[in-house]
Length: 107
Image (cartoon, rainbow, N blue to C red; front, top):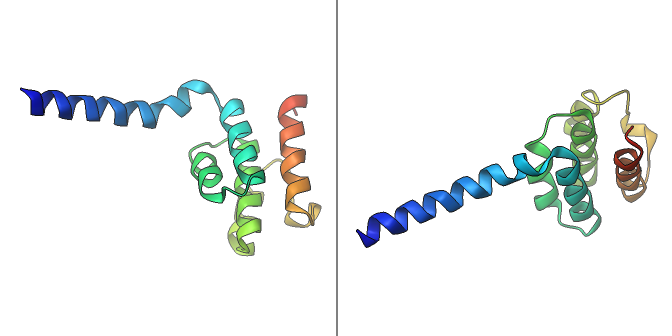
């Protein structure tokens, strides 16, 4: 019985960890991802960005691959944004802050 309860608890925690980001909402998740990227936590930011599909998430995803140095993949994600381009920003931090501002402005 204790083993089954332990497995059940483990499964519940797994579901919570998978589903919680969806419950919080894209904007909040994007804010977390942007801050993670600004703090240098590329993995955390990328994990969040790849689970979201709106234009702002695609823009963030593009910037993350720009930071990574993967121009081809970055341009793929820029193509999924609302007219953003790889060349629009030379400074990734400035671009991350522009994404953050666009969330605040509702753009």
